[in-house]
Structures are given as C-alpha cells and as structure tokens.
Image (cartoon, rainbow, N blue to C red; front, side):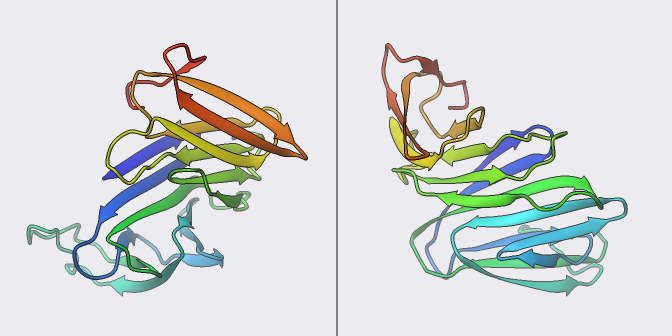
Length: 212
C-alpha cells in the first residue's frame, strides 16, 4: 500500500507498506539523470533548471544506481515502458522482515539555491515519523513534523504518541488514523521536548479528514 502526503509547496512524503513473502524488501525508482549522493541516504537529481532532492528516512537501506538503456524498462505485464534512457535506483532494506514499511521524502526546487533540509527520524508509539527543518522562508520556515501512525494491522490507528523537539509554530501532520473521527490531542512540554498524545475520543478537540 502506498500512502502519499503532499505539503505545499514542494514536499512529498511517500510511505509504503509492504508484505514480503520471498526475498528482501526492496524499492525501485527511475530518474532521467544520475542521482548524486549528498549525505547519508540522501540524493539529488538535476534536470535542466530544476532538481529533485530525495531522502530515505526509514528503514536503514543499501542503495545502488545503474544506468538503464533505451528500451530496457518494462512494466510488470511485460509491456514496454518509456522509450528513454534513465537511471534505476534500488533501495534494499538492511534487515529482512515479513512486513516492511518505507518512508521517503521528495523535495522539488530550482537547481540552485536549494540546500537540502535536515531530517530527524522520530519513533512514535506506532509507525514512523520525521521532523524536517532548514526549509526556505518562501517554502515553510517553521519545522514540519510528519507521523504515519502505522499499526502494521492494515487498519487505521486509534491512538499514537510521540516526542519531538518543541518548536512554537511547527506544523504537525498525522496520517493513518480513523477517517472522519474525533481525537483528543494534548501536548506536554518539558526540557525543550514536546510529548504529543493523540487518542480517539467522541468529545475530542480535533477531527480527522476523510483520508484519516
């Protein structure tokens, strides 16, 4: 299952939930130009005046990139893919599990003046999270916190808790909760750390949208 979260103006979070019967959990991405490593599990792809930054947040992966010749890309049904040369990135989880989730972040921008943001992986009570800082003032100068409350049961979560550096004005996005449902959200701050508790409650102070 692929879950997508778009945060304006240029951040896309991909959270994939994979059940593995054989082999090692692996993801595949195709790019028009060769990705350049610019940090631990971070890459940049430049295409003309634009660039795409990518960060593999979870799990720990081993990545490799190979050139794909024209006519080499085929779809799963055997039909031919785009008839262009490309670069194929393979990301393999360093550990093998029957259930594996992947969290990747993509940021689109101009090919200059867009230094990569900083990412801090979070460990909520269920699922995976990340805190993003270092965005441009024209994008979103305040930190962004994203939580995918994955309970590994292929059903929406009733509650989630997480801790993160306290940042006034930070935006928090929580996904994979029950859709159109009221939740009680509380925050406790101590020694610069914010503890967030989200629990399903009919009298809650927040309500999820149709996507949960």
